Image (cartoon, rainbow, N blue to C red; front, side, top):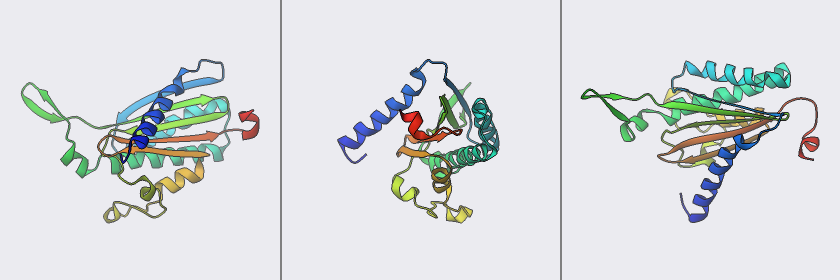
Length: 191
């Protein structure tokens, strides 16, 4: 981080993330899942979040929007957070009866239903993003050799009502998204 202020903002955002689960009212529900950072689990992640959303009786379009955004965030964690560079620089080792073996990296999802708003938080403990602003530019990709389109963050931003990315090189990335579900307006929700 470049300054004390950025560090304070990072710490504040992490505290806000932890505060998601502190409410306890009848319109509040939450879940958290953890899974191996492998591409096949992307389908599991988006289906799990879509299923969690069902009490709000979402439209097919709302379900599709959420599934797309979750898919993009999980794919980013798997492809970019835990790439070859991560394993070269931040290899995790455990000992199993004198043998070293690599521990599988994980992706984490925390979802909260707060009234008619879905909060989705997806994070990894991978290599992090050095320049978030650049990474969020449409068509930017750090992996052009893998035919990546560079549209992941653009899709998340387009399909969700709010998107925030928090990252620190060497410590991972957190994607925070919100989506209002249903017919009541944001103004009614804010009042």
